Length: 142
Image (cartoon, rainbow, N blue to C red):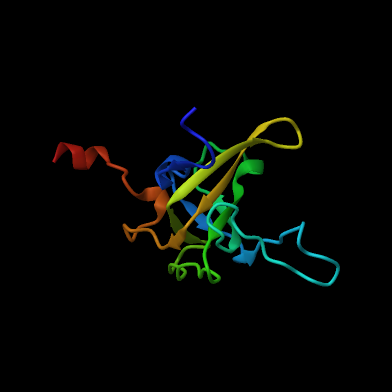
């Protein structure tokens, strides 16, 4: 099979309605290398880059409440900084570049996905992710 390892996908395939940062960017612990009192940060097995993690909320209204928040792992040599908050919004919209997903079977026997990215940035459009690319009928008639 030609497809092995992480599967490259577009940001819009994973978060078609956008997503929002709801946590801090934190280093991911390497549980095998860390010992009591000594924290070792995880490195990506393929690239060797340090692994960071941030919690994001999926803006898709059809996602069940228990599945709204997901962890996104960021591969970067230094701790990534989330985009600046947008005035009037309770959460900061964010987009990711170079997104990959890795399917796996979780502890309950269900299919799950690990999401890894190479960069985090503000949305390109300047509008909230949940409202971009929506065409109203009034605009279609004009």
